Length: 404
Image (tube, rainbow, N blue to C red; front, side, top):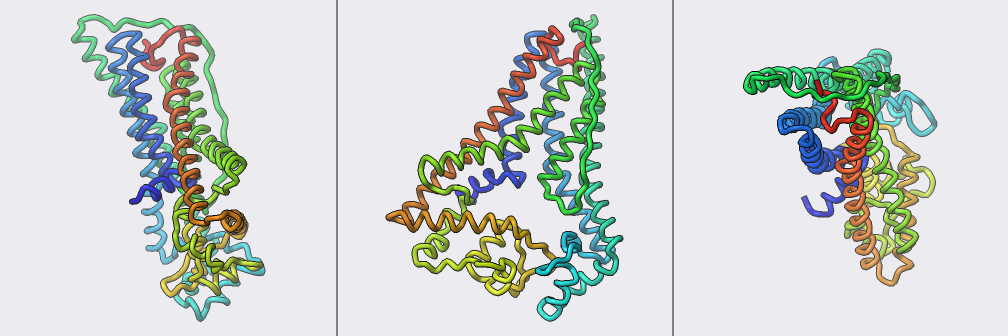
């Protein structure tokens, strides 16, 4: 994978790659080190137990969180196929309009994509069953990881600590020193989430994170661990799923103002020689009115290929548009405006290639800075604030759940 592709991947906040980099590569190692130093203020034994729990908790959770949803999604899709339905058929097509819909596409593509049309006919004839299957797929792909991460993993982790503590105390031939903490009130949470069958992996991960928070608070060993877990998990959700979008938008807007360069496009587009050449030679053909019609009549145009790569448009092997997929016209319209804006600025510059290289450098810098800043907030700032609040509320530096 080239450097541009790597930067593109970690800059795509709709994918799991930024989460993977921040979570496993930066956040967890930093938090484990800080956990050791913080609990060492209490005792070496406390630090040892805290680090072991943190390693199991963090990497165990990440394995389930990052891999569990795609794995269960895949298995559920295979199960739906075994029942004779194609899970690739987008349920948004049940909403018929003048440009697309299940009935509309069946009629329009009956000669162009007969195999796909037959699959759509079966779904249309069994709408309720298909919707229930998709809803079941969503529930399984979110509920199972929540149960494993929020309830099973912490319980097993705590049980391991209790067992090892018995051995540690016997070895020391005396009870482990008890750290007193202040009294306080229990914390409770209420939450709700809407279930959508047509949801991305990252959106499912965000919902799963909410369920994980509930599970972790519920399984916490005392009221102070509940309080700390709630604060920490809420902060992590914000810094993983909200802040990176805000930071990216802010950097891109600032770059546009400072450098007069539109950097809202993906780095892979800015590095695409064919795309840059089409702007230079005035051969870039763009939709003027009906986007869906353009995509169907011009499947091999550069814009259609870019929409396929970045906007979820699907084509069959013969380059017929896949009638099973719903076209998000608003998303493509926004993408088109960014393409037009970049092309206009590039043409106004004296050198289009130089302008594109400048945009690529600025965009890459924005992405790297975004990852660095959000990782710093997650790995350093949030734990530090948590430790400060812990000391203020409990009067102890030790993990609340490990204090006897």
